[in-house]
Every structure is written in C-alpha cells, then in structure tokens.
Length: 528
Ligand SMILES: NC(=O)c1ccc[n+]([C@@H]2O[C@H](COP(=O)([O-])OP(=O)(O)OC[C@H]3O[C@@H](n4cnc5c(N)ncnc54)[C@H](O)[C@@H]3O)[C@@H](O)[C@H]2O)c1
Ligand SMILES: O=C(O)CC[C@@H](O)C(=O)O
Image (cartoon, rainbow, N blue to C red):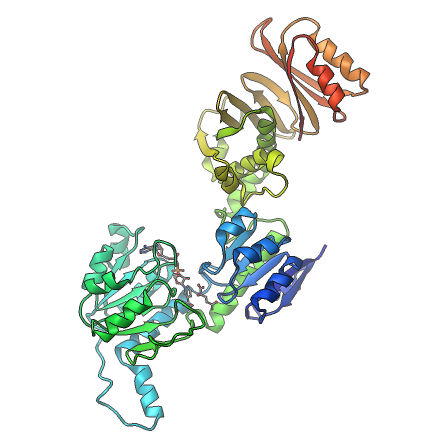
C-alpha cells in the first residue's frame, strides 16, 4: 500500500526530503487550493501537512476519511480543529522547537526597529527625504520589558533582552519565583507586567483564555507611552482597543507580526504611523523552515508506519526508551480492556487501570489509553484508537483512573482493570510471563491461567457435580472442540467460573442451550 501525503502550504524542499525518499509514501504539493478544492481532494489522502495558511476545520477533517495524521510545520495549532481530529482518532503533530530561535530573533528585530523608528525612517529616506527630526527613538538600556508567556520563545527573548541590558519582568502561570530567578527575570503577575513595563511582548498560544489578553482594560493599566509587540498570534490583542490606545497616545507604538485576520484585509491599524509590521515572518528563515519541515516529515513517516510520533499535540509524548520497555505490554492491556468490556453487561461508569511491579517506574499512560481502547472497541467499533479513546470514554460519561501500586502479588508485573457499573464491580488482571507470553491471571476473585487469545467462553456456575461435564458434552454435540479449560471456585459448592478456549465461535442455538444447563448461571462468549 502506498500512503498519499498532501502538503497544502509552501514547505522547505530540503526539509521534506525524508518524506519524498520514504518507501510507500507519495507526496503531493498543492499549495494554492481553495477551501472547496481542499474539501474535494482531502478524501484521497492519508496525511495532511500545513503551515498556518490552511485552515484545517471540522469539515475538512470530516471529509478526510483516510486521514491518520495532520502535521503542522511550526508551533501554533490554532488553525487546526484539535477536538475534531482527536474525536476522529487523527494524530496531530507539530514542530515545537524548530522555529523558536527565529521567532525570538524576529521579536528582537521588531523591538529594536520599534524603539528606533527604523521602518519609518527607512521609508522616509527611500522617498528621498533627509528627515532627522521625526524619528527620535528611545534607548533600550534599563527599560523594562514585560513578557507575557515565558515558554520556549518567551524565554529566548528574555535571554536576548538581557544582552541588550533591558530589565525583564515576566508573567506565565507556570513560572515559579525560583525559575524566574534562574532565568534572571523578575517574577510578576499579569497586572505587574501590565503596570510596570515600558515594552510588552506576548508569547502565549492563542486559546480561549488568552484571546484578547491585551484588551481595552489591559491597555488602561499600562504606563503612558508603553510600546507593544506581538510576534505570537493575532487575536491575543484586541486590535480595535490597540487602535484607540495608540490614537489617544496611551500607547506610543506597536510592532506586529501577526493579525486577527490573515492575510490582513482591514488596514486601519496598520495605516497608523506608530505601527510597524511584518506579514507573519517570525518563522521565515531558511533554518527554521528546514527544521520544521524535517521534524514534521519524520513524524508523519513514523505514524504512517504504525509508530509513535515524537511531537504529538493531541496525545502525550513518550520517550523512545520508555516506549521500548512498555511496548510488550500493549497486547495485554488491550486484551484485558476487551475482556472486561465483554464481562460487563451494564454501562461502565468508571474504569481504574492499576499497574504493579517494575512497570510502575515508567510512564504507563499509553497502556491505560490502550486498555480503554480495548474496552470501548467492542461497542464503538474499529474507529476507536489510542488517540481518541480517552475522549470517547469521557463523552460516554466514563471516568478513567490510573494507579500504580508497589504490591506485586507475586508477579513481576501485573495490570489490573477494575470497572464500576451502577450496581456492580468487575475485575480482570493479567501479566506477561517471561518466554510464555500474556496471561489472564485473575477474574474477579478467581485465580486463573488463561491465554487471552481466540474464542473464549466465560461461564459462571454453581460448583455442583456434573456442571462441567454437561458443558463439555453439549459443546461436543455442536462439534465445538475445547482447547483449554480453567476452573475457579470461591468455596466448595459455591459460586464458580469456567474459562474455556474453544476452536471456533459458538452459534446462538448452542449459546442458548449452554445457558439452559442446570447450575449454569451465565455464559459469555468473548473473542480476543
Ligand atoms: N510569528 C511566528 O511566526 C511564530 C513562530 C513560532 C511561534 N509562534 C507563536 O508564538 C507563541 C509562543 O510559542 P512557544 O513555542 O514559545 O510556545 P510555548 O508553549 O513554549 O510557550 C507558551 C507559554 O505561554 C504560557 N501561557 C499560556 N497561557 C498563558 C496566559 N494566560 N498568560 C501567560 N502565559 C500563558 C504557557 O504557560 C507557556 O509557557 C505561540 O502562539 C506560537 O504559535 C509564532
Ligand atoms: O508557518 C509559519 O511560517 C508560521 C509559523 C508560526 O506561526 C508558528 O506558530 O510556528
């Protein structure tokens, strides 16, 4: 099979070489598609790679029936409907580090250009004017630079600003006083940054919470004559409020690389002489474009080949080292999930995946997702995968818990899944036996030793003479061979279970007859 990859925004050609050279992958670069054309073409593709121009909206994702991965050659994924992708089980990958330096350098270039009116002076002299009076700037030394969002780019800006002998104050919900000290920046609240800074630069993602973080109210709190920079995302600044703040001289000037609408259609703000601007060029360097294209190409190849990506946006990332250690347990966790789903006849309200033994030293969240996937698949079908399983579970109102315990109960490693329904709780546990493969070792309170493979019959019965024999002879009448049988009981004559591995699935008639055998309380066929 050959995978079809669509690149719908211009990408660095050297950067996509790994994709072009990969086996079983065909790359199509179609960078001028209208929305209607994209909707028409997308059903043909297994992967879509974009920069910021292509809007990967819900309808594009819906139409992309074959899509397995969407690659964003850059950082911001606000042009991709992440919820829609997650719901459809499509992995979204980006390149979180590839353009950090370029974006930070662009911010510094804009800061200096803003402080010294370089673009305005440049335009004036190019118009054959020799005007030295209109472009008097301000020094950066000892001014206060406020940074909102001290992530990758914000931090790089802070380092560079200190080189320019600016004092830096920063606000980020994840910034601690200790970290601020290490970085040589003053730790502040958002209000501190707004009130104290001579220049304010924003480096947050565009989220519901950060939209218009610089609003009319925020401008009112700022020093008179403050200067504003935005090389992160349009929409972080309320552009109408910025326009008014510049007109009223509250804000002395602004440097903008990004806009609420791109390409810009309304030039009211840009027409102000105090505003300098670039058309979203923060990441436009040879180096950054090559970096982001390489990162995304490799992740797309990994996913199309069934591997795990290095920079996933909608699933947590796992290091290759951890992956190597937990990979042998994938088959077990999914099978346990499937098994417990079939055991449980009421809607599941809560699932707890418990890990014990040496697995507990690792990040085992991929195994939890895999167990939940196994649990949902019998009801939701093959479209459930590791990406959308937690999302689909929470939409069904199922709470997912993950826990680790040091108690090994005699096994080197044990994965236990417990589910809670309105009226009952069920448990299944399994392990990986060295050289022998996966085993189910516990069903509710019964110890068993069952290979989680093929066609199984889980039978709950009363521990009475003849029950097991009648099951065996009835299956014989239906020409169903029993490959293995495990029996467990709570006490002599009490409740008991049988787990049979049979060579072929049983039909409805056989199932009904089994259920009518005296002392047989419950029969559940389970296909693993
Ligand atoms: N202009 C460009 O071409 C260009 C290039 C690269 C990145 N970007 C944009 O720059 C921004 C930053 O990118 P990054 O790689 O540094 O991201 P990042 O995830 O490393 O950092 C973002 C930081 O913002 C912080 N944050 C989130 N909400 C906040 C809030 N309400 N107040 C303050 N801080 C908050 C986060 O805690 C995080 O530390 C993104 O919007 C990205 O899309 C633009
Ligand atoms: O694709 C681009 O050039 C913009 C990238 C930038 O906005 C990003 O978020 O990485």
